[in-house]
Length: 265
Image (cartoon, rainbow, N blue to C red; front, side):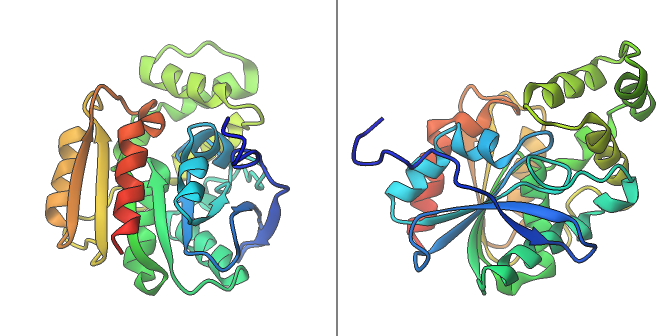
């Protein structure tokens, strides 16, 4: 690591923010408090550390002069992990981010989200446009893939260790167990909660901000992500070569495109 930046990828102590329902949300901050802030929001079964720190995003954004504010979404990382599906509606996930911004006294931020974090970012930009100046949304949409998870098989595995037969569900279980501290029951509840409303982004009601979409060339949702970019009035799209959904956050092309995009504001 460059000696001039010895602590850029270290995890600071979490600062906890309370959601409207009383859930604790773990947040992390890097850089100067008066710097232009990038709010980084991770994907399903990931965390701030896993999605943004270990992949070099915090390092690159901080070196570019930005302040980085990361959050563990409810159900993830060091945040509270309710087991009730009703706790994971899309509007609630977006409202969590408003609570974080209000607590940090931030009127508006640049936004970086991946997978579920991108889906929540889309909703935040639509529901509370005053809070999002511009955004990078990677690996979106997220709702449809989660709908393929077999809830009963995943719950049986979490509760009793029953082997998972469905391949897609087995992939998600493997993903969930990859990150230390994940609570599989909470993640199953999240996947189930996403089905209680409209989990997919609505192309007929897109964000009006300038948005950069990014998806891996090997990701099954590539063309749907591209279509969302085309439906967004000020949307642009970058394809990440040789990346699939689960390794795209580590793409140097992705990081560089995001930094350049934020610097254009």
